[in-house]
Image (cartoon, rainbow over all chains, first blue to last red; front, side, top):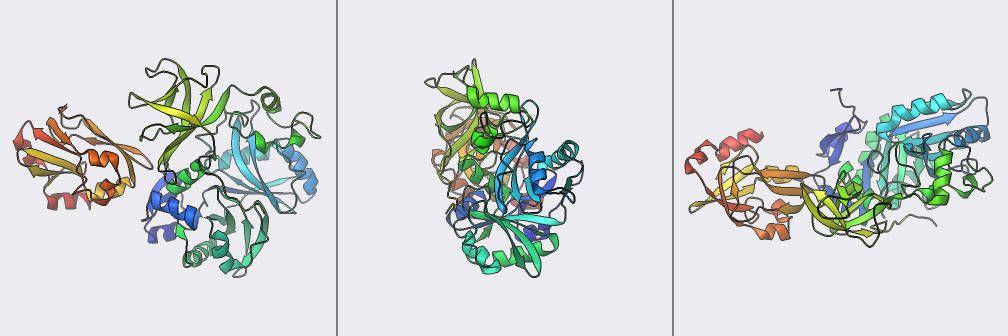
Length: 377
Length: 119
């Protein structure tokens, strides 16, 4: 077994009493002494601090070419509008493969003279290699290892963060800007993965611990582990790569059509021209039969990732699979997301999930389970 | 009280033993949200998976500590699984069982031995 990597906040996690688990090759806190349930509810009500330094941070730039050139090169890979992404704006996107499956999902920001991309921990090396091999040699792709990444999420996050770095009210949802702290530059975006208002901050490894200690010294914020990060994102219907997304699932099947701007769709000004365009554009027109759906298990038992779904309670007609499932601390009941094959299933039929050789009935519902609360205006 | 390596405690209740999980186990599991208990009258053998516990994060099994038969179950913890986090060695017992062989109790750990076991 290869040794687990540690983030710049490892010592802080330990001193805060975190329970550590291996995640994507890193030793990460799954929860702190508060526990997943209370951490989750605290973040929804007030604010939470997350270490997401295991995620990849890419800087894409060029010494010889313009941002316009980099954008058009990236648009050959990603089905999103990058030419239209303004300076200091961020956008969700993904890298499709030739069959339309998803190599990774990501957040990309236009920083004026470079693009800043946050990618999944488990896909860092794969993404880096793929980008390096598939874009112009005049473009530099750097996987930066000198910066940590943290998130501050929840309704009190603006107030708490502004105590350290100043006024944040002009930074709206998916805006990005630089802030300074103790002579170092912080890259701050108003975004995150909890479905709430919040910020993600890239900062030098050397500054990270003291910055986080000062954040945690404020009232109304607690450290939150990966356990609650998972339940928070699931409540808001956000996908986790490796569970809800993978190389065999297309963005349209995953319900991510909204992330493909009209300008890149059929009839748009720059339609297609990206990897996987045939499958993806076709599915936008034809509607896939295999689709991500939301489920309420009818009983108390959580139906988790890998649970097979049937249209009968004897396991004869398999119609899908759960890809994420847990207990929802906000709703105080189990919730699940997964995929249904609508060729094998009519919406008026019952659905059963098989757990431990028993069949539990589930009800189809709509995402998100808990409404999002981004600061759009 | 006696203890197993699987972090169960066994209390004595007349001819029956009362079985629950230790504080250490409850803390390790985290917030418990679902419990499935065996039916009264079930014959169990040592090591058999007889209780399902789900925390927010994961599912785990509780094993039968010894051979015997389930004589009573605590439905209160099924209705409110968080009881197990709050009072694991008191109100939140799991089930009572009659033992096939009382002598097997001697093979279990004392409280002091258990404390050493979890250190």
